[in-house]
Amino acid sequence: MAKGHRSQIKRERNANKDTRPSAKVSYARVSVQKACFVLDAIRGKDVKSALAILTYNPRYASTVIEKVLKSAIANAENNNGMNPDNLFIEECYADKGPTMKRIKPRAQGRAYRIEKRMSHITVVLNER
Image (tube, rainbow, N blue to C red; front, side, top):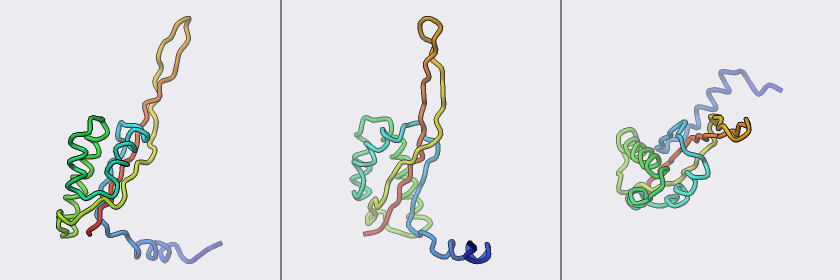
């Protein structure tokens, strides 16, 4: 049943906006499972040590996540006026994106499906 007029519902939803600095990359060509290995390594760490971990991590997802983290730091500095030395990673997660389906020819006229998975990676920072 109705909980008020549509404009009132929108006003209430926008009133409690999240003001923490964040950055998101959509449709990153890395699977959620592979991105989560890297995200688990930096969750809760301060920004300086997280960047060091991402720089020397050999996984492909670490380069994508490093760009997102640098973007979140820039957002915190320029939009929110926060000091980058006091920032830490409060939340980081990867959501499932669309899957590209490709076909691989196999023996005797068969065809196997190859799924190229994508993810949406989000990094949320906060000040200590």
